[in-house]
Length: 103
Image 1 (cartoon, rainbow, N blue to C red):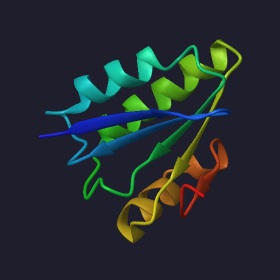
Image 2: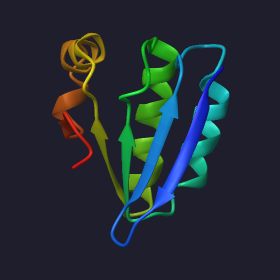
Image 3: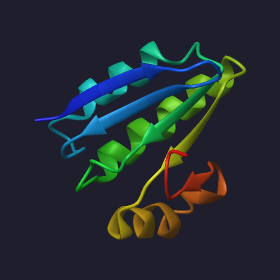
């Protein structure tokens, strides 16, 4: 089960999925990112995501592409070593800023 919370702040929107982000839950995540594509800046916090597969990574990249097409931008916060390694190994961190915390 994947739960997604969205918090609106003055200068950004925080999207915080909680749960495994995989082929079974990716549609929900993709829908949430699509709804946020018009925002000027979205921070996706992966701190509560214990696992993400290629479907989750693909949805994240698709959401970033849609945001940038609308002149917005996305950053990622991730404090989980396994996910951080995945983001680095795939080169994701070269196209999107990845930081350890939301702050």
